[in-house]
Image (cartoon, rainbow, N blue to C red; front, side, top):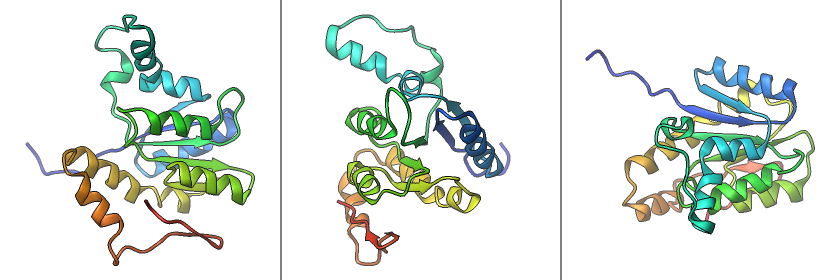
Length: 185
């Protein structure tokens, strides 16, 4: 056993635009994240194994055998485009937050359109951040606290109250988005 190293976090990047997907992938890799990039919300759900989870709940069908790729890979954060054909980033966010097994994974939404009502809706539904495209390295640097928070939830799954106390502590600063104040519930 050598010296302890900082854990490498795995980010699932979802964007239907090849150029935007490659940009976010490069920025994340530059910041030493392991990245899986997919081009749609449905492929993201497939990678996460959520489609199969829904099948089990709805009609009790059998699922892929253990060892399928999504079961071996832990995703620490999902960053998704808002505007995508088929399933929007907002739809993906809702499915993740409604899932028992995935709800604690931090989700970040990105969009080229600065629409305050859209930003509010995503943040209210549980998104950690909302980035305007083109995403920059300074945006990617904002991901680390969310990754650490997600890691803490994994390490302490039985003590949810402690996490809520930290969120509502007076020392915690509130994040501001161009005049919008985000209040964590």
